[in-house]
Length: 423
Image 1 (spheres, rainbow, N blue to C red):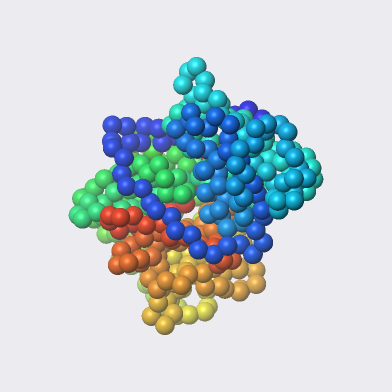
Image 2 (cartoon, rainbow, N blue to C red):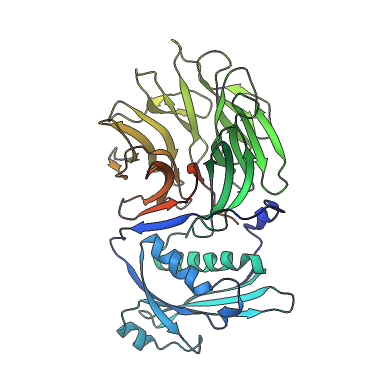
């Protein structure tokens, strides 16, 4: 299968003329319960590429916690893998590939995945990658390995967005899921918060205080064009996209207490969904994966809890019952799990709730967690927390076994959001 790397290249103009910034450092702890042993060989002639393809693949697979990576050294003939020998070395699968520089300056990156269990080739992927996207080519290979061996789509080629505060400056960044290739989307002397990816991954909605009040914007990451979505009296906050990308659910205090509205993704056409009596605070809306429901935080029961209503604002039902303070609902892509922040014994920690069984699990061991965001495959959750006196990003698998910390030497990083799969 031959592909040309066009997906995820939407950020090509994102930082034109701007310098690189400090990258995030990833620290990993814990492993999956049943790791798959995979041998990854050095790609033939990968030294001519600006990216060491095999090293990125190894790092991706190791970070997932799902694989035990075996260094396969160099395999001279990628088309001739000795299945028996690699099976004896404990590998269930072998990754091999080649890199060739083309006359136009791009790179032909080819890979094959072999199964020692089945003694056959499982997959192959051929990509033509411009020089600046060889790292993306490696992420796509790791995604293919992950999916072929686990049955679940990989998320290594996806993107994350977050806010970094450095002194009095606030900056909205977009980066690879591993924190590399950090790019600046917006810089302001006023706070930026609540970024939210559009379903097609080309836009980000967020709240900015640059007008000395909270205003909701949508920014196109390709053209950098910004659109004001809500600049009503009072606070305009908490934008969340509908699955089809046509609408945004937002929280507005234009009529007094904060309530939930829906607006067109191109701006305007406000429609109120909640109208609590007596007045309460309804905020932090999130569309369900099928677009038929909206989850939100409300204090209508006396303290903040998470509720669900239909997309038109009716049939409100309470969802969280454990603990007296539950906020920041985020729903998984399959609609089966709800992530949220719960305050228990004075600690703000990340929990996940199985919506069918009602069983909840605490996923973090930190004490001041914020802003959870599911990976698009539903297997990992990104969130902000305190680390060494600073705000940092953390990532955890939904079973709680694999934990990662993403830190930087300068500034506080917070308000993370995980982007969608790119087609």
